[in-house]
Length: 174
Image (tube, rainbow, N blue to C red; front, side, top):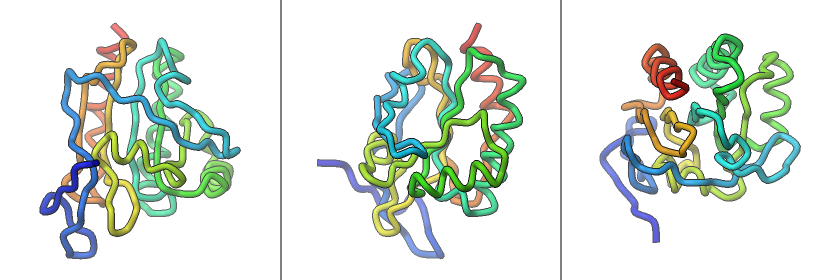
């Protein structure tokens, strides 16, 4: 049974229930399955084995902050090189991911849907029970699957510290 926590996040001014525990730096990142835009099941860590991963958790690509964050990571991906993979997860349906990426020209970030399983949301402590969306957070996972950076945003509309995320990823590459 998953842990349910209240009092750590609000949605539309109301306390919501977050399912799962917060992860911390030094832990092994949990493997998770989520769906790609073509509906195929992808295992996030296995599919990017050998790379440093930046994993972003978003409420929905169809919101201004999530749109801005994903576009920013897509721009940064070009300068990061092949040793770093960027994955962005939301509860958006796979065909929504495909449509959004096409319209936005996002082609360097791997977008995944947690809609069917909610596995990522539970394992990474980002699933909001009442709305069934993901809490905004960013994780950096090294080549050995260890978390080297973890940041949970205090509010859904708060963007991550991009400089800190990118610095952690570059440091993990070595």
